[in-house]
Length: 191
Image (tube, rainbow, N blue to C red; front, side, top):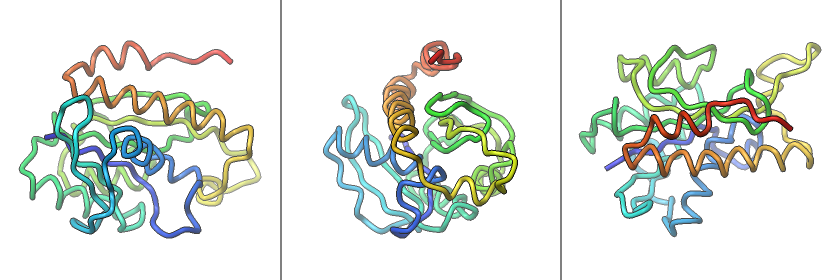
């Protein structure tokens, strides 16, 4: 079983913000593969199902972003998955162009507090991750204010392209084709 975690903040006022793009990917996977992500367990909303015939647990932590590791660790421990191979974390990245994705199998938190907390709880930097670009903040805006801001209509189109690409990347990763996913998606998209 693979655990697919999309990072975000619970409650309606954070819906559709840049920081919640990980939740958007989980919602898209749930819709596409008819998986209900409504069960409350592991400090998260979860749903079990199959993606391309492979058993998955879709997870939307409800701990708020900076404590995401609590939820991830609880799910990893309960289902006894190998976090290095059977865990995929999806989250926003301000250093990537809007809608661009980047796949990594390990690395630092890169300033992302949700990832920092997951690394602390797993005591490892080795897990699959899909970063989705939400664009760079303007110089007059602070980072927290920016990631909690909403996409404009035009930005949402590009963000949704990134969500689609992340879904495609998940399908490859859980089929043991992480290298193929990296080759396909880890390149700058010319617009």
